[in-house]
Image (cartoon, rainbow over all chains, first blue to last red; front, side, top):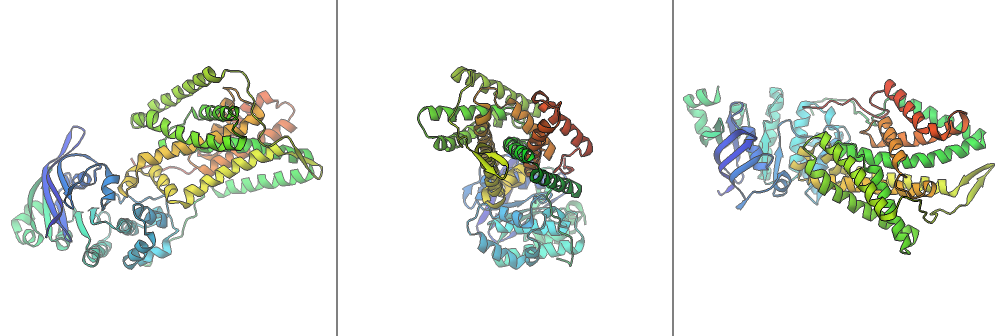
Length: 233
Length: 328
């Protein structure tokens, strides 16, 4: 398997705050990779560095070519980023949110039909304002919108945040389905290490802006000392 | 999903009492117009005047939503583009060709103003933006006076001077034309925003620039297009003002104040509100001028702002405004 996404020595800063110190990681085509770690370890910043919403240096390669420019240029390369807080447009309708997802696409109708296989309930809500959806439904809408972009790589920032366990299971089921049936490559950031390790094939553990540990999820799960000290369960 | 049934909210942004009030106002105008010829005439003239307020108010709202600044130069931009239209007719371009050419030039000017003057200071502070738009006001005023002089200029009357008679009521062709052109441009803009992909992307870029860029929208371009469209609306307002006010560098200054009142009346963030606000203000001022003895033309502006004050006391968010919950 070749790496679809490869970060090498990536640094990122918010003004004077140095958030990432030489992070290197790679995600193979068709796999699910997880980025784990405590609050403030740099998980979200890693995703933001990839999508260009934070100033970054170092090399990021996507599909064999360097990834440059702002978030809109990155989106057009085929990377969908569901940010913290989901990034749905609360003021717009469900349908308008989905159309925005397909903004860079031409064949909107096909994309919509394809998306519906995974999120059939959205059809009956198409003219509802997105802000009136429940938290779980908004997270689903964010996923559906990202899928409408027909990306090669999906970046997910804490999809489980603030959701009931039942909904978290449902959302992770859909992510796995998208990965298996559509061959979608996923890089997911999670606070909930337990569920993320079950989903992902590879995992990276960040500590204060550095990769402290990485390897196949199964291995990380097996070592009890690793689990205790890094993953906290 | 999960069997949740939730009521779908229809969001016009206007609350029921406001809609009832507007409905009652329309009914009042209708009954008045049917029972009195002068009332009908003044209502139509008021709508024509109000449609100009509405166009300029909508331009203010577009820019306020996209850039969160009141563009104090909006009226002067409208005035300058009207002079450009005038210059075109001097070069023997026919009126309506000059009209559409002016709109195209206005669009380009709006885009350039955004790119050169607004974008560099956009993320600094609101005060910086305000100062830039005030500076632009002075700059345009100076340039126009230097190029064309401060004396009155006249363009060809676009709608002629005919008067139609229906029953005992006479409508000037000019009022009807002004009303039609202004309302058409507002409707076209609404269609653009509501039904096209470009319009959707522009709304998304104004609402949540960060989220919009993540789906591939070039936010800067969308804001530039927004400034361009606002300038086009301004040009329509300017060209439609010319038949009654004639061309002079100060022609849009009072109108900008009325437009500002109309925009605030409508809720400042609501395009529909600004149009309703503009039309209502135009009709109200005309009727007050006709029927209230002491309300001479010098008192028009104070009366407009008195209305604004009363509405804002009763409903601080404006007629169509919603309480804003902003995440920090």
